[in-house]
Image (cartoon, rainbow, N blue to C red; front, side, top):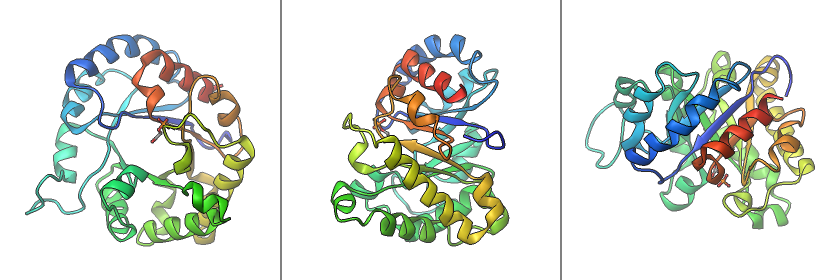
Length: 255
Ligand code: PGA
């Protein structure tokens, strides 16, 4: 982390928590979040059905609420999808885009992401764009090729002036939900590479853009990973379902 970039920790609840369970989480989380959020941005991304509850309960708290996906069209015949105006109406301020689970199980494509990222930015939503390689790609030494392809394609239509408003999450797919984390060297190298890719577009944006690490972050490894120079925070899945564990990660990001 560098002083110019404010750290950010985001909770990705995935398909977890009913609204009742979200209430329960917030009962434990909100008293503690004040202590950490002075020096970092905290984002919670519940499933669509809990967005309204979480927005309402966090109105007075230093917490921003994000969705886990969106469609780039404002309205239309897209059964099962949710649009930007629908999210804005609820008070949502961020959106995870291109999570590997959406790429893998729901055919999310770079072409769609190239439309979604600028659409989110135009609406004032903070896009948290996920990129990362599979285990096979890492073993075949194709990590950089994959990251280059994703970063270049997904940000292709973003104006240089808005590049620094994107948050990028480097999430090696083999580390998601597996308990395996990238080593500090692997995480720093990949994130440094992603920053350099942004630098190919604009040197100033590369310095300013926040790049998170994601993949089995928990309170025991957060301090080491988040202490690395190019890592500006974390996108947290499993550990973010527990208020105490997510708060401990946020505290590590702040240190
Ligand atoms: P994990 O998930 O922390 O459970 O590995 C991270 C993510 O998928 O964003």
